[in-house]
Image (cartoon, rainbow, N blue to C red):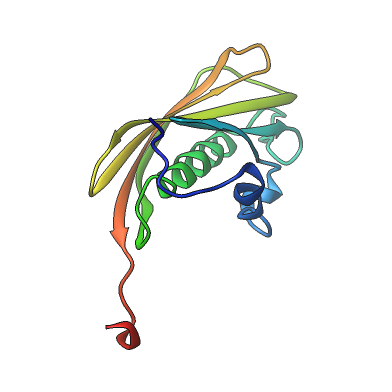
Length: 146
């Protein structure tokens, strides 16, 4: 059974990135199934640190982007999710190519969600592992809607 409560397509997800850091770094959502969402990110000048390797912060951006959008697709209308905490362990250096991040839920609750994001290279070797905690919020009604 799918975890998603909102309808979306890869095209609609990628549209949310226009004019954001996500677009600037070249992150693109490329697949999803009933319980995970994946995206790719280039390892190039946009995502390098000064020594010419993948910047750990770029990996964290990919992880938080994936976990955040996935979390927001798992809540009912009138709800939204915001990040509370993220950690990342950088396990392998990369100088070029593409990384693929995959977000899977550890916990989807009424007030919090926890997501595991694994980022791997083109040979499926783990580059970074991250855990993201999200708070589930309720949109406040406008006075005109009360």
